[in-house]
Image 1: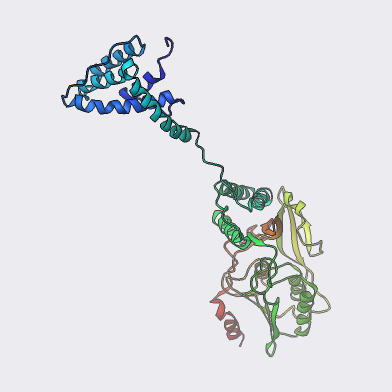
Image 2 (image 1 turned 90 degrees about the horizontal axis):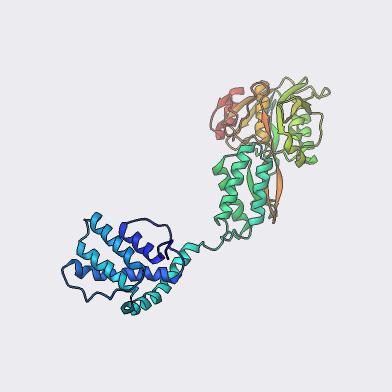
Length: 434
C-alpha cells in the first residue's frame, strides 16, 4: 500500500479532480468503488442543501483516510465552484465505505459492481465477433489478386484490390448469394473506383446468351447487300473471329468489289478480335499500311490471352516494360476493286472496343469518313480470366494507341468527321452520295 495509492482512491481522485481516464482496471472491487461513489453522490444533495448528515463513521487505521483528507484539503482549496459542505459529505461517505460500519454498503456495492464489471469488461474486451465475408469470399479475393498483378495500370490495379479487400473485411458482400447479383455489384464497385470500358465481372455459366446468360446475342452480321446501284452496305454487331464470320466478310467484299461506295455500319458493333477487320483492310488498302499500335505490359504476357501470332501483328520496339505490336494491313492484290471506293463508317455511343480500333485505323489513315456519334470509349483490350466458383473477370491487360500521337480513346471515344444522331447516320450518308 505504501508504493502505490489503492485503486479505489485512484478512482475517487479521478472523479473529484476531473481527470480523464480511458478505461477502468479490471476487478469487482474497482467497479464497486464506482457504484459506491454514485451512492455517495446521493448523500451530497442534502449536505449541499444544509441538511445534517447522520453521525460520521468511526475512524479506522485504513490507509485511505490520510489520502482522503489530503484530497479534501485540495478540493477545499482549489474547487470553489462546489459547496464546501457538499464535498465534506462526499469524502465522509466514501471513507465510510472502508469502515466497519459501512460493510453493508460495501457488500451492496460489490454485488452491484459485479453487474457493472460485466458491462465494462465486455466494452473493453468487446471487440465484435469477426465479420463473415460471405460465401463468395474466395473468388473475390482471387479477383483482388488478379487486378493487383495484371490490370493494365498497376496503381489502378492496387486501388481496385484495396477496395475489394476492404469491402470483404467490412462484410459488404456477405449477404449476396446469387452469382449474377454479385457480378453486378462487383462491376459497379470497380467502375466507381476507376472507370474502364472493358472491366466487368460475369457469370461464366449461363443461358442462351452464353457466359453470363442474358438474351441471345444478335448475329455478327445482320445485313450485307446492295442499297442501290454501286452502293454496298454491311452491318456488323461484332467480330467473333470464327471461320464462318470471317468467310462471310470475305464473300461480301468479293461480291461487292465493283461498288463505288461502301458503307460499314458499326453503330451496334460491341467488339471482338482482329480477324474480320484484317479481311476488310486487305480489300480497302492498296499498299502495306500501319494501322495502330497495341501495347501490353510484359508482366501480362504470362496470361497467354492474346491472338495467335499473325503476320498482321508485327512486333516493334516500344517503351521499356512494354511489348508493342503494330497492326499492319496487306493488300489483296488479286482483288483491287475496292481500293478506290468511297468508304463511310457509321458510329454511335454503342460502337466499342474492336469497332473503335477499326474506327481509329480508318480515320487516322484517311481511308473512311466517320459519320454518327462519338464512340463508346472502350479502348483497353482484355481477356476473360476465371475467378473460380463459375465467375470470371474481363480483365484489361493492354491498350491500343494512335501511332501518330501515342494516345488511346479510353473513356473519350473516337470522334466522327460528321457528327449526327446515330439514328440519322445512314440517311445522312445517303443524302451526301446522291
